[in-house]
Amino acid sequence: MTQVLARKWRPRTFSEVVGQEHVVRALTNALKQQRLHHAYLFTGTRGVGKTTLARIVAKALNCETGITDTPCGRCAACTEIDSGRFVDLIELDAASNTQVDNMRELLENALYAPTSARYKVYIIDEVHMLSRSAFSAMLKTLEEPPQHVQFILATTDPQKVPITVLSRCLQFNLKRIPQQQIRDRLQHILEAEKIGHEESALLLLARAAQGSMRDALSLLDQAIPHGGGSVGQESVRAMLGVIGQDHLYAILRALAANDGAGLMAEADRMASRSLSFEAALQDLASLLHRLAMLQTVPDAIDAADPDRAALEELARRFAPENLQLYYQIAPDRGAGPHRSRSRPGRVRRVHHDVA
Image (cartoon, one colour):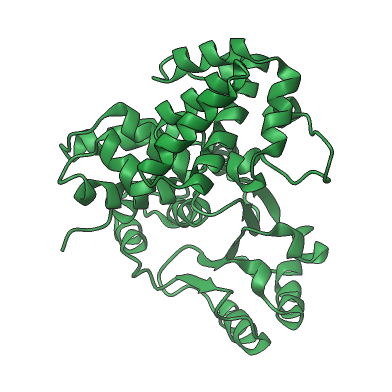
């Protein structure tokens, strides 16, 4: 059976991790200097590498070559961690084990020395889902941890983690991965897999992933069979249900020219092709956001972006204040991760979202 891309291409060393250079630099320096903390907390949205980094740290601590920032990947500890068979690496999904009894059992086992490793490593995913009593049980061990134990906690919602737990962890905030880095990673994988692709299709997948490498790889797994063994722009558009940019550009050009008749004619053409108006509004909001970024920070749009010339032409047609208004009218969910809800009737400054 063919292994899914998200598992096959999961980073196994710090050097393979994409988009989290600030975290990788801090962790590798700490490992080089052997300035180890007993508890780490990785925060960030889904699919940005929290558990992947946790497993690499577990390898770095237990590699048979010694504590290192470059685990060998060949020794028994490294290979068993990669395959999920390492007896001294305990992974717990807090969403499924919220009760205090589960946590007490885990903490009681932590008192015993590792079976064969240098450190017994506990990875607790979605730690914010633990009950209050389970957090209380954990707190005592975090205050006075055994020398042979390392805790690595991961969460998508750090605000729900008690401050008493946060204060005892070294916290790293993982960011959404930039579209360009996702696109480059997808291209590297497809070239290694010898699968044909169009660059514009990869850009569509990178946008749809909204900063999550795991989501991007899952979408790529869908796109390959959908395109008959290759990844093309039209196939990906159909798979994602993305409205063609030509329709959106025509709508914006009519809007910029105050051409009501042209705008209605374009809407009729979309209706005749049974295109989703809801999806069109969402994509339009995303496009307006990109135009605002281009007006404020021209370098925010990659020079290699195939849409850049069209975006620059459209950005010149709109006054910034009009662009702000259109963006405000578009659906709130349509502009991706930068968007937040404004109070009704108030035009929010898109330029502030660019930072």
